[in-house]
Length: 622
Image: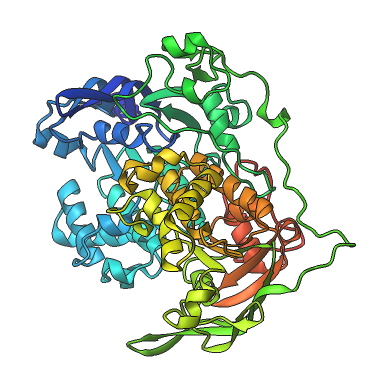
């Protein structure tokens, strides 16, 4: 039996220690290293941010630590979760005793992780009973207490609900409660807030921090959003192509990054102050195709011959962390010059054009089993030629419905939707075919927007064929012109969607939308599913198209930082109502509506140093 001193020492066991971890997977006749020589340490009460683009190896590292990789995977090196060493030869029984007790994991899509046909209380109670070896009655009491601890609204009622009856944020709270069921020393959180609204995201981040403070558990927080990292993390490890390229405290990484890749990620982030994101050209090399030297060298403006031939060692610096780079950066990022948001205001001597697209006291109703539901009401706003308008708000606020009214996908139930002096025709009518040449949509998911059986080039040409524009040769020339306009190589015309990256697919979708030379582009969460570096390049592309083609843009988003970086005007939606409308710079500096204040205060920002709302205004709920 352990004495008090031994027990205290055991309780202070380091939640996670990884040393020299290499994870490989069999790919046909070859074996590829997905993660290479990774070392990490998470202390009790520490939140480590694990950041990098898709394909960097973040999730694989977490899955390896929990022994969740399949039989085709092999791990080398040492993984220790609190008091337990994890190997790829561990039995199912050994791993089962660790998962949930020593460490647990929260996944990005809570809805896909919960049983849709089982009540929340039952799922949580069964997990508690299994991990704590208690009776059914005790498990139910503990489960209900866990719902209270994760600040679930009306926990007694939600205990008896199904997942589909809860919001995304509430389901994510259930996932956190499930993760806490076995009182783990370590929590892996894999993009747990990516799909959530900014206010819900802020609540979840605050919840994770408060639970950390209460239980002293360590947390590995996987994310691509450096604003979230600054908000919630103590330390950061930056991954690229399966390796840790830089690590250190949040303050040091954010203000004085040493690896060019880290700086590239920071510069890819839009900010509430109007910083225009600068994307990193190229993409993360796939396992098996990584260059012999530094994997980032092909994308790095500082790379020299040595970088392309040799792997840089992970330098241990002055106690502030490590960096794997032959030519690391020096100096304070705060002193570097960053692009300023250009003024979007029109000079006084320039005539303001007439409104191109107008919603005048517009409303939209949807039929439900319980009758008609009014999604938006009394919406009055206008878009002039060359304008860029952001429509922001939480899920269910009516943002996408406004886009549908503008596109003619839904008719106005009251009021009017007018384009170029004429009513917007409804989808399916003859007039809408002609209207579609002027107003085009860029949807959120590029893979769902493209036909997987057709080449990229044929899909870009398709609108021209539908509208009978040009000869076959002229359409082919237009296709090449469009590919060049969105920064894609003409060689990609013969590729299929699954053969190119998500960012390239989104560029192809934009090229197709531009084929008919529209006057208005409606972008509905067009960058939500992309890495920050790819997102930055898409924003840069839209800005360039806006400038060179005098294109009017409606940008529907829940990310206020993107709205600030791209758009000259902002419309704020809440519960189907337009609560604030004005110039972007003025609204972000001095919001007038309490809801806008709340949204701004909830948005994580890499440059945030102080409350972002007037001192004379109280934050709602304070």
